[in-house]
Image (cartoon, rainbow, N blue to C red; front, side, top):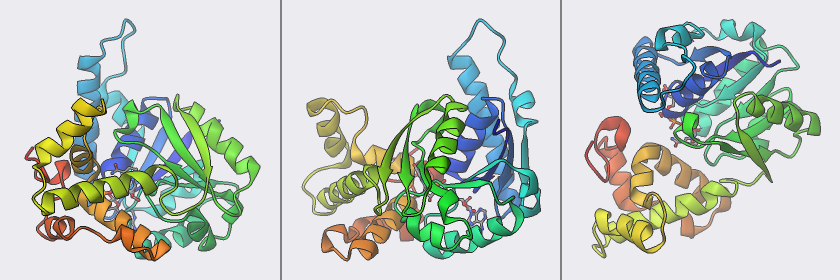
Length: 283
Ligand SMILES: NC(=O)c1ccc[n+]([C@@H]2O[C@H](COP(=O)([O-])OP(=O)(O)OC[C@H]3O[C@@H](n4cnc5c(N)ncnc54)[C@H](O)[C@@H]3O)[C@@H](O)[C@H]2O)c1
């Protein structure tokens, strides 16, 4: 069984992945680059578990937040990955950051361990190319919030083996999740469409065609979507959206992916959406 899991990055996604793993009987080594970030992550996981127990009372007594947190090691130390069975990498969506992390994982993780990149847009083949195990690297694009989303987009890089895909399916089954496998291309299926939609929605606001509320209402009331594109952007993080659209722009060299200046300005101003308390909406 894939029991002990390395989770790199304790931001929006790393916190969700670590929580979902602890709630499905895994032990987690959660790594980030600052003690303050890890302390915030611990508090977020505690509150999320507490709330999920309140909103989903189950007949069986669910483990307490303290009990689940005892299965997560919060650390800055990559050496603790030496006995993990599987790694999910959720660091910042910037190639210069990700490309430094994988050689460090190679150094410390046993050679059979699969690396799953939870990236929004970066090519999985490119990630595989900076490792010594490109056949054991794949994309595992979790949806946010991770504990609540049952299906994951899995991406087959150029060298990803069938055995690696089987290991990934087994790993996701252990988290009670299903997957849809697609071939590698920047943004994959989900974010090639979603990032363009969000960027275009930002342009509508930038050009004064509509308010943020009305953009979102059109998607909800007319199309029946659960959330509009700008609310979704705030949930994902406007910094992550901007970096993702920049990756698509650079990867395809197609001007249709040019980032909306309003999005760039908001990120420069520190408006990251829910995680900073202000984005297209206030929280
Ligand atoms: N936010 C979403 O909805 C979403 C959904 C799917 C996938 N993703 C992808 O998941 C990844 C993480 O996104 P996020 O929203 O959690 O971003 P985030 O900015 O909230 O968190 C990223 C974390 O990575 C940490 N980090 C940076 N360098 C590191 C290093 N060397 N070692 C360990 N940790 C490091 C940062 O300190 C930060 O805490 C990105 O690649 C993103 O594209 C995001």
